[in-house]
Structure formats: C-alpha cells, structure tokens
Image (cartoon, rainbow, N blue to C red):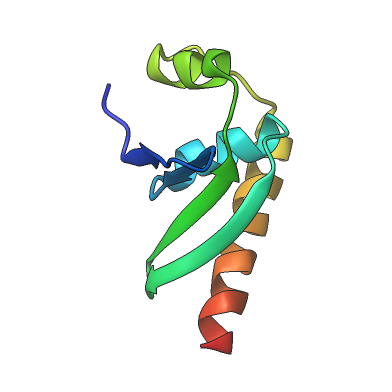
Length: 87
C-alpha cells in the first residue's frame, strides 16, 4: 500500500491522506499544522510518528474505535475548514 506522505528534514511528517491523518491523530501523534490546498484537500503536518504506527497503517493493521475515529475525522475537517475560511 502506498501512502501519499513525505517525511521532512525537520522531523515532521506530512500527508494529504485524511484517513492516515485521522489514524495519526488517534495515535496521539502531535498535529503541528493543517494547510488547506483546495476546498476538498488539505496537507496535514504532524510531528514524526513512531515507525510502528506507519507500519500498522501500511500493513492494514490499524485498529481504532469507530466513535473515536469519526470524532477525530470531524475534528480534522473542522481544522481544515477553519484555516480555509481564514485565508
């Protein structure tokens, strides 16, 4: 499985994949910034996650409670829309 993400030189991890962003957020990886790109896409920047978190995502082993997942997903969407409205 390929992920649409970049590990930057300053120990940050960027992704356009809201599913991965949601999983990172649920995994207590610090969300550094949300940058809206278009009305339907954002770049999510996190502190560098543990490799085991990325491995779980890539291996299809990511498990999370559905209520917590939906809550985190909605939170990230609100963050993105708030930033977009501020532009």
